[in-house]
Image 1 (cartoon, rainbow, N blue to C red):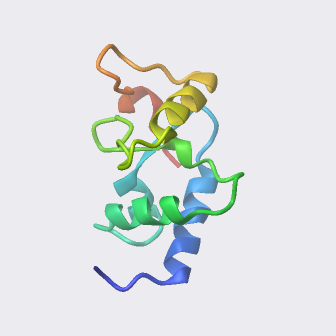
Image 2: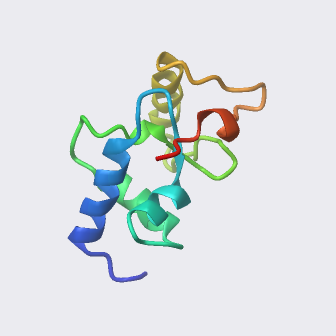
Length: 106
């Protein structure tokens, strides 16, 4: 695993905190905006480790516009979908979000 610094996590959290209600960003997009191109997986690690309940982690999805399933049978997948739907984000029959419509474009 690559060396992960606290400052990288702080940069990731700053990007995620800026995603507006009703919009989503992909893990790769967050990494790029945080100055960490190619480190989408590190974004996932950072969000998993996040302790701030106010961080809108639920607005980060994978490159297909899907919620990435968590290991261990977590309720996080369902919670993420419910939070996004409460913000007006619509899922299609396959459980995907239209990135063309809902992607955050800072």
